[in-house]
Structure formats: C-alpha cells, structure tokens
Amino acid sequence: MDIRMAGITKTFKPDIVALEDVYLNIDRGEFVYLVGATGSGKTTLLRLITREIVPSRGQIVVAKRNLRKLRSSHLPYYRRDLGVVFQDFKLLPHLTVYENVAFVLEAMGIPSRIVRERSEQVIDEVGLWRMRKNYPLQLSGGEQQRVAIARAMVNSPAIFLADEPTGNLDFHTSESIMKLLLSINAAGTTVIVATHDQYLVDAYRQRVVELHEGRIRRDEERGRYFVDGEL
Amino acid sequence: MASFNYALRDTFRLIFRHWGLSILTLVTAVSLFFLLGSSALFSLNVKNIVADVENDLVITVFMRAGEDVAPLLSTLEDAEFIDDIKAISPEEGLSILKSKLGDQAKAVSLLGENPLPWSVQIMVKRADYATPLVRDLMSFPSVEEVVYAGQLAEKLSRASYIMNRVSLAVLALAIIITALVLYNTVKIAIYSKRREISVMLLVGATKSFIAFPFVLQGMFLSTIGAVLSVALLAIAYPVIGNMIHNTLMFINVLDDRDLLFRLYLILVGTGMTLGWLCSWFAVHCYIVSAGSPD
Image (tube, rainbow over all chains, first blue to last red):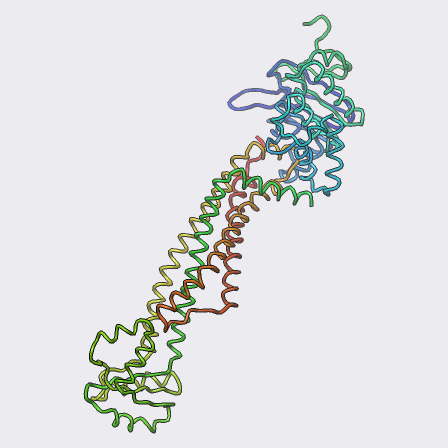
C-alpha cells in the first residue's frame, strides 16, 4: 500500500476544521481523482501527503514512512519520491524551462550528464522542446502546466500528485495534460489528481474519492464526477 | 558536480539580480580592506623606523658655545665600549646637515651665521652601552646636549602604541560595519527568494543545497572586495612610499616584498573568512533554522 491515512483530522487556527476523521488507503499504481467543492479539503489532503503540513490527529503513512515521525532532515529525501504539480504551478521564475526541470535532479546530486539527458528527454515528452530556453513568464498557462508536470516526473517519482492540473486551461490543453497523467500512471506511478474538471473525470473513468466539508463522502472505483442522479 | 554547477550559476544570478546592493557591498568591502591594509602597512613602517632608530648606535654630543672638545675626546678615547669617536667642527656639521636636507638645504642659508657648535660623534659597540654613557656625558659641564636615537625610538614606540590602539578600534568598527552590510546583503537575497526557496524545499532540495549559493555570494563579494583593495594598495603603496622618501629622506619606507606579499595574502584570506562567516550566519538564521511544517 502506497498511502494509508487513519483518522486524519486537520484543524487550522483558530478553529477551522479542514479535514475530519479521514480514512483513506491508496495502493501502488492506482489513479485517484479527489473531487469536491472548493474548501472541501482536497488541497489540504495533498499538502498532508507532501508534508507541507502535519495532521492535528491521526496517522499518515506514505511509502512506508510515518509522516508524523518523519525527521525534518529526512524530509527532502522523502519528497524526492513524490512528484507534485501545484495549482499555481510554482515554477522558479528566474530559471528557464530546462533549468526548472533540471533543478530537481541537480538538487539530488545526480551527475551532470544524466541531468542533461533525463531533463531533455522529459521536456521533449511534454512537448516543450522548442521552448526549453524560455522563462516561465514567456509561456502560456498550458505550457507552464506542462513544465510543472515535466519537473514533477523528471525524477521518476513513486507517487505523483496534481492539484487542479487542468484548472483555467482550454479543453484541448486539458485533454493533452490528462493523457500525460495517464501515461505517467501507466508506467506504474501512483497518481492522485485533485480536480473540478467534470468532463475529464467522466471521460477517463478512474477511482473517485469525493470530499465534502472535510470528510470523505464517496469512494468509488471507476466513478463519475457526480453520483448518478445528482447534479 | 551538477549541484556545484547549479550553485555557481545561482550565485552569479543572486549577485546580478541585486546588482545595486552587490556594488554597495563591494565598495564597503574594498574600503574596509583598504583601511585594514593601510593601517597594517603604517604599523609595519613605524615598527621598521623604530627598529632602524634603535639600531643606530651613534651618540651625538653638542658642546656649549666656545667650549673645546679636546678634554672630552681624551677622556673617552680609551674607553673599551666605544667603537669610534670623531669630533665635528661647526663647518663640517653644517655641510652634513645640508646633505641630509637635500632640496631643502637652501633653507639653512637663510639662518646667516652658522649656528652649530662643535660636536662629537660617538659610536658605541652595543646599544645597551648607550644609556649609561649618555647619563655620564650629560654630567660634563662643557656639554650642552646629548642626542641619542634611543630616546627618539622610545618616543616613537610610545606614539605608535597609542596609534595602534586607536587604529585597532577604528578597524574593529569597520569590520563590524562590513560584516553587517554583508549579512544584510545575503539576508535581502534570501528574503527576495523566499517563495522560490519554499518551492525548492517542496521539490526535494535540502536546506544546505539551497543555502550554498547564498554563502558563495557573501564569500565572493567579500573576497573580490579584498582582492580589489589589495590591488589598490599594491599600486598606491610604492607611489606613496616614494613621495615620503623624497620628502623625508631619512625615513626608509618598508620594501620587503615577501612581507608585503604575506600581508596581501592575509587580507584576501580575511576577506574570504569574513564573507563566509557573515553569509553562513545569515543563511543559518533564515534557511537552516527556518520553521518546520505547521
């Protein structure tokens, strides 16, 4: 099992309950959609997995690591097993497309030749070869999203997290990004996507976990965005 | 190797991104190390002059006007501790003075009549014989004044001691100011990159990997400051030394190339160390010790 959450509650000061008593198990190689209204707790759940935040109560084990007990000196090494695509991309503005992608490998201390080969390969895979020397501000939203995906997949992570990867993107760009995520999953990577995109969830049916006011309302294999009859 | 390449690239990115601040830091560092080097050169020269004066074993005895030097010469001629003794007539004394003054010798002719009395130059075998001899010479009724370089050396030593203390205090202050400027430069660079730093942490970079370019930035600015100040000193010192020597010919300006090279090396080493310490401290405060997850 890749991710195991048991009785997770997360409260923010003063007394905002973002997640409450969440039990969730995700196996290796699964593709999971996290759906739910804004403020339902999707992003909080992803931030718990990246250990940007720690739960107020409950246990969270990711890739056999208990995140409550994870020492801060081990955190970078844990995060190297994750690939994360953030809602706002979080690209490094003073680095080019190539440098943004290569940064992850450079930070891991990988030899220059391998950094170059692997980064160029991934940039090519996401279709940004022509733009590898551009800076993020010179790219469209969809292109920036692709850079974020390339950066998240360059170190071949075991778990891939994407927060609203198709938000604010046009239909064709969204679809091409979805295909990229599916190809990452096909290679054996666990993929968790927090999304509001009803079309994609319904078109590419996978496991759906629906959050509502911080609780899991529905956990369904090959589910749809909405439960039948609900809209 | 890729990590080091990244660190180097990022260091120069940081320097050029805040170029105004980098120039300010560089100017401050150059000023400090120039002050530090100048002060060290001044102290070394004073020490050199004091040593020269101390090693001067000549005692000059000025006779009272109209007094004969012969009785004094006959008293001293057989003394074992005297290496050489020589009577100097007023005319001879004047020509020696003129040769010492060089270009300014014309000023002596303005005095009109030769004001110099008879004098006796005594060279002792060892410096420690000088003080008791000076005391004895002063007791001669025919002696007006005894001039011995040792007294001058003592006065110079006392003056240089005070000057050294004052310059140390000024230097300590200058070092603190430079350290603060360096610390602030690195702190501002860290602050301006705080969002990027949080992203770097999220994608698996260690704090030391993120911190390294900031430490290099501080070290680079400080070392370049020290190197530039050494270059300035290396150009200015011989020029100023020549000027001093031409004006005050009796002063031998220190020209020991080995010693100067070592001094310049120490300045550059101090620059590197100061830069490393300040940036390490800033990095430690704002990156390494930064908070853990909520």
